[in-house]
Length: 260
Image (cartoon, rainbow, N blue to C red; front, side, top):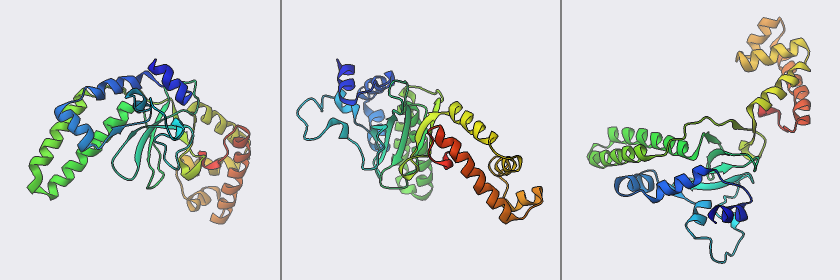
């Protein structure tokens, strides 16, 4: 019944991990609960609120707007929030019929830098690692509160030991193409294939400039030395190569040449 309710509200199937995380979080007590809620500042929302029965009554707005931030792209469904600058994590459904979705996070009130994780459990693990590093740094400069830092670190250890492990690597990752560089998602093999096709449309010298600049990470001046031309000419070739490749990328549905 719960899965059916989520499907009714969101129009997508959520991965099994959602329900595993819900059961795991519901069972946290003591130091583990302190670590999750207070040390990490995490809260579960969105579809988890459905599981908690918080969306059972009448709503004054569409449930699809529940825990959506102003600049959230339509593919992202928020499932977890942090306690600073609008930090939130969500399942990224670029292909609603395909599971598992990519997990992505960003700060809604700060730089729109997208961070991807293999799973929600993996995202929590990364947040634990960042919190540990922060505790170590604080301890060096605030010895008076060492006992508090020790307690928080023990709590994080207890939480991490109980955390569900989902260490698979995501098959898909975000590529730039929407507001603020947050991105769209496509199969990496698909992107590589399209880029290879686009490269084949370039003259030989253009190919060389692209490879030396993006793969070898050489400067325009260095590339000019290799090809025996001045830096200005390298810049012109580079710009022209991107324009030619962009035509091919757009034909494949990728509408921003900075995607590669």
